[in-house]
Each structure stands twice: as C-alpha cells, then as structure tokens.
Image (cartoon, rainbow, N blue to C red; front, side):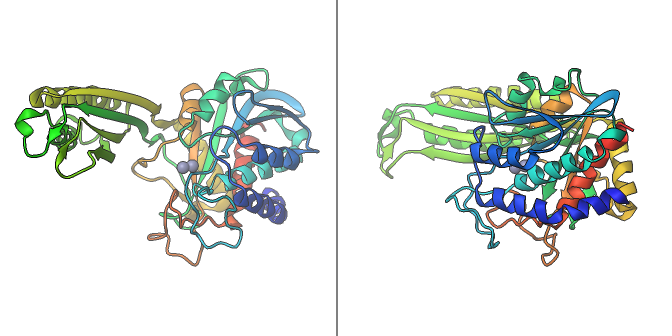
Length: 395
Ligand SMILES: [Zn+2]
Ligand SMILES: [Zn+2]
C-alpha cells in the first residue's frame, strides 16, 4: 500500500506539471520547452540523464542498489495539430495545437514513477531506464530513440519494457486494460496520384479523365478488403482525402487520394499492400490513365509479450484490485510507435481509463478529438503502476 500512499502524496506536483505541459503543447520531434520542463522536474533525483541528438528526448537511468537486469518505462510527450475545444481551465495556449492524446499525462506519470523508484533505489536489484519520447504521433520518435541507444542505456539491453496510455473515453476512469498478443494495429499511409489528360467537360472523348478512374479505385479498395483479407485477421482501408479538379466544366489532368491502412498482422499488412497496388494499377490501365502509388509504412502492429502481459495484469490487480483490470477480447485499431520497442524487447502496452467521472465514458469524445478531456486524478495511479511494473521485475 505504501506505493499508492506515496503516489497520492505526489498528486499536487504531478497535476501541476501535467497542466503546465498541457498549456504549452509542442509538436513532433522537437519539444524544447517540454524537454526543459521535464529536465527540471527530474532535477535532484539520482538519475543518469542524457538527451537526444535527432530529437528532444530524455533518457534517464536509475541505478539500483544491487546488480540485476534493466527494465524500461516509456512515456511519449508530443501533442497533436488539433485546436483544443475541451473547455478545461488549463487549456492550450498554442492555437491549433493541443494534448488531445493525453501524452502530457504520460510525461507527468513517468516523472512520478521516477520519484517513487528513486526513493526505493536501495531495494532495486537492477536498473530502470526512463524513456521520455517526442514524436509518437507519426514521427517515429521511438525508432530514433532506439537508433540512439535507449534500449542499451543502462549498459546492457533492457529485459522488459512497459508503456502506459490514457484514454479519454471508451473505458471508465481508473480501468487498466491490456491483452496478450496484438494490442494495436499496424498503420500505413498510401498516396495515389492518377494522371490522365485534361480537357473540356463537354468532350470527354478527347480527354483521359482521371475522375471516374479514381472513383472506381476508392470503391474497389473496400471490395479488396472483403474479398482478400481473412475475416479473423482483418484490415481497414479508409480514404480520408480525395482531390481533383477546380471547375464543373473542366476535366482535370490529375486526381489524388490518400488512405490510411490498418492491419493486425504482418501477413495481412503485406497482403493489403500488394493488393492495393495491383487494384489501382489494374483500374488505371482499364481507364487508360497513369497511376503513381506512394506507400509509406508508419508503424507495425503493437504486440504484447504474453508473459510480460500476464505480469502486468497481475501487478495492476495487486495494486488496484481485480475489478479495475480488464483484458479486452480484441485489439484496438489505433497505432503506436511503442510497437518498435516491443519488436526488440518483450513487454506490454497498457491502457488506463482517464475519462472524467462526470462524463459518460461510453459517449465521451475519444483521444485525438478537440473535445477530449483526460482527468489528471489518475496521475497517482499511473505513477504507481509504472513504478510497480519496474519494482516487481527488480526485487
Ligand atoms: Zn495519439
Ligand atoms: Zn497517444
């Protein structure tokens, strides 16, 4: 119980830190103010601190009092290009930018874990690596930190890695959710440019119209999913952007769409990549237009190690009781670059419900919404759970 009690004592500090980060969100790989604020929050703790070269990351190593393995705890730090409409009193001061994914809570929670673990340093048989990571929202921050050596920051490869993610809806406040195996989808982006030959809208026979070709492609991609993808190993293709032309009576030269592709296994991810290319090339040929396909692989599926997940479930159950721990039957269709850590080290990605108690979690706006609200009442629990995950592996 003392871990929860000690975490509760940190509440005011962690809430103040979180709200300060929330007021000053930063995007991408360069978060200088966030980095400065977190370095100040860690100052005075017995940590070996280093900062990133290609990004404003912080890697902090806590040396235990006795020898043993190293465990990694990760927080992502970046905000989103979303103008905040949450109505909270500590709302973003940066127009068009906000912590709509709750990464400000992750940062404060990991600072709390560092304080809790530093106070127990003598009891630790091994080291803890704290990974404060910019650039999760599509910028490959975890990949860059891995390149810069975060997994070996303690002098040897960490033997387990854990990350916590808060959710503004879908789950009641305080619920800890994780599952063994795939927990989040892979995410890829594809940009398809169809090039024909423009002309007068009254004389399509003298042009090569890219518009019907691109319309056929968008429709066919949904058929691609239902006809080629195993229903028990699914995929999603969403065309979120489509542009062509500028006037009703002009056939344009080009038409462009962009789609996000989500999948839950390497096999389906590859099947969809190949099938999408085949489909749009075939349709382009049928319409007598050219097509260019620019496929960008973002993040692989996030796959939890079964043993580390069972351990995380056991740890959360011991801390909070069985009524607050849930193992969902299915993965979520979001994506994470913590997947890259879990490709190298066994570990678990764990969700924590942070919906305000005066909202209905079933209908509350979700992460990435301008209206999303994350209740920082969960910060002591976030800190305690992260600390406990390391503590249990090192005692
Ligand atoms: Zn996000
Ligand atoms: Zn996130």
